[in-house]
Image (cartoon, rainbow, N blue to C red):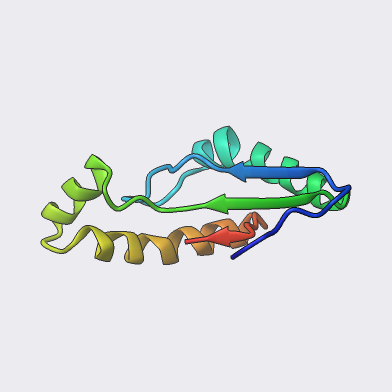
Length: 101
């Protein structure tokens, strides 16, 4: 996704913390980290700011590599597997990103 600066608009970049991409997110993750950021992103969109809200996996974190070794697969395969699960959970909570990789 590419967003270019727009003259006269306020530009906001939002990135959520990478949490537990090696497991299913729980309510504490949602409330403690994701929900407040999502509310702020929605607010920025409502204000017509030029905003981009990104959540990204990181297949090179130690916990990802450890989980991959446990499941005898690659870190990318772990991220791909849990990406689907995370997306379902975030959709259920109506948390949306401009870009979720």
